[in-house]
Image (tube, rainbow over all chains, first blue to last red; front, side):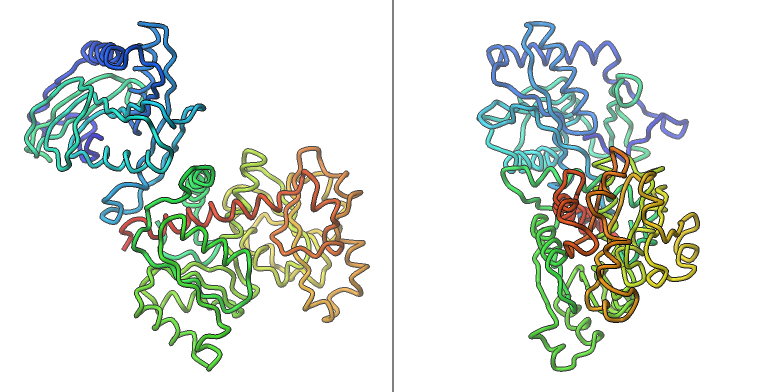
Length: 194
Length: 308
């Protein structure tokens, strides 16, 4: 998940905003991950993509669309809201619960690929793994992220990474997608304003 | 987010809609392999029931347990209340035990409001006297929204003993906030003068059930409280049933899409006939199931975060 504290638009008081991935870059990265999924799963049979809201959900749909375009395989897509499984619920005002939609075939015995925009502390993924355990019993679980920015606090790694971005803790990685924000872009906001 | 839920008037349209939306997500848990969420792990919910109740207490208990909270059930019978302990002393005891939320039902109108001053945790009104029952109104609104797809603009008739009904009061407040138009129907002796204006402007009153039936989307039948039948609010049970009971003939005069609701427990043959209660238009069983989802949403939104 991108940090919510990241500013939505660059302002003059934020001197260092660096575009890491442009619109075209994001599309290429998604294409590559789709190819990698096909390669690593031998054709994406018995596979389900589960996007973690907010931006993991449209990413999961894009990956499924690209996989379908490349090899004609229809991969079921779902949404997994992890709000009720977060380990920091008590540190914030009550968070709104989002929808969870499993694909019609469910996840039992399937290969589940979790999809998120940014991999950071790993706590979101931990919550997603807990949620999955309550929803069924997948044959295996993998993780695909658009950006891995490091600073893991839990022993979690991604199986598919769009781009590794070395960051300082004070910096913010901001992902925008056409479906949720109007444009595809990944920016690194400097630590001076966080 | 609000800290207590004491009255249907505590909820503005935004908060009420958030509760209904959250309840829709909570409902999905009932169909899952593990019907439990970890959101309230380590929190304690006390069910403090001074009045008899089956469905409300069980509903709150199920809701709290599905959210992994610890539940302590307290009923006045067999407790120190029977020895004369006051509400305040009981509240301080619960406070000392670290209750994060107190779900209270009491025969005195306003008891939950007093309780809210005495405890640090959240107080949820599960029915106080003839005053309010906000989670019932929320589950009714949820049921209407899931059956009819919307609340704004709906025409809702609340029929029966409005005078003694906390369900009616909370429903008028909440449904008006959410844009539905409520008509109170019943014998003049059971509809307080000026209640419509006092609760929510725009609420109508009608003493003739047959006049409102053809134009409503929802008919909500209230329980005739048997303990009040001898208080001469109406001449006889038979006359009440004939004028204000919902039978098959009256049901057929409803619009095609209209639904029939009842908060339970029903007096079959009195305010509602078995034919109506068991018809596909009746949402009575759904209301019970929805009650758990709505109460999960309320408990989560009150206790899920750090709202202090």
